[in-house]
Image (cartoon, rainbow, N blue to C red; front, side):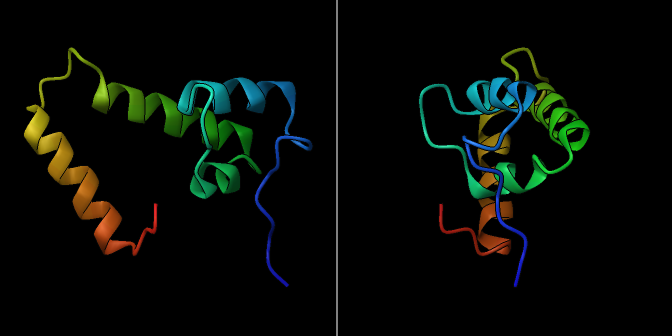
Amino acid sequence: MGIEPVSDETASADVKRIFEALAPGGKVAPFFRMLAHKPALLRAYNQLSGALWAADSKLPEKLKDLAYLSASIRNGCEY
C-alpha cells in the first residue's frame, strides 16, 4: 500500500490555490499532488520553479526547455 496523491476533494484551500497556479483550469500533475502532503514543500517548490521559469529569468528559453525535458526523461515521466 502506497501513499495516495492529494485529491481536489481532500486538498486544503491553500493547496487548491497552489494547484490552480500550477495548472490554471488544467490537470495537476501527480508529482505536485504528492508534494501537497507537505504544503510548505509544495509552496517552496512552486516559488523555486516560478523563479527558474519566469519570463525575466537569465536562462535562455532553449536551456530551460532542455532542462525540463532532460529531467522528465531521466525520471521516466509519462506526462
